[in-house]
Structures are given as structure tokens and as C-alpha cells.
Image (tube, rainbow, N blue to C red):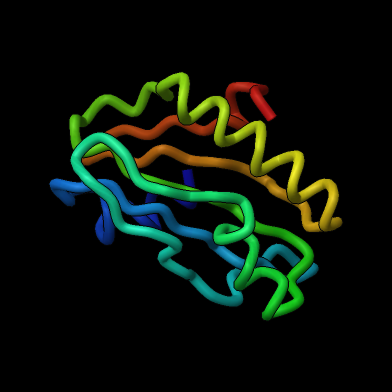
Length: 118
């Protein structure tokens, strides 16, 4: 919910998708917010090497990923599910904890962690 509250004013109203990373320190405090990519109405590109590049550069131990759905429906697509799995696997390999992937809309959100999908 905290991720939604933070990112909703920034990306919840956009007519296109944006993919963001929240870089967190060992106390899980926000170090930096990074826009990874900007896309079209229905998709954006968030390859693991792009998603983790700044986390490695800032040497943070944890990240939360988030993107918006301009449709207003926060339900994850099959592509979202596949991406989340790939990001989690990459984080495990890099020893950077992926705490969540949140889909943000104007008034609702979907959290993979809250749904037990990580």
C-alpha cells in the first residue's frame, strides 16, 4: 500500500505504461526511485538487465518494481506474471532482494507480494 501511495500520483494517471524501480537500503528505506522504461498504452520493456542496472550501481540490497496500467485494471497480464518471475530469478542470482512488483492504477493496485505470488 505504501508503494501505491507513493507512486500513484506519479504514474497512476498516465496514458502510457512506465516501469519503475524503488531502490532500498538495508533498513528498507527508499534510496532512489528510477524510471526504468516508458512504453505504450499496453506495455513497456523491463528486461532484468535494465531493471537491476541502477540497483547494482547504487549497491542496494533490495528493490521493489512497479508499473502502471493505464486501463485502470490492476490485474496482472500473463506478460506481467512472466516478467515478475524473471525479475525475481535475476534478483536471486544477483543477491538483491526483490520485495514486490506492484501494478499501480488511478484508484487501485495489485501487489504480487500481498497476493503470495513472489
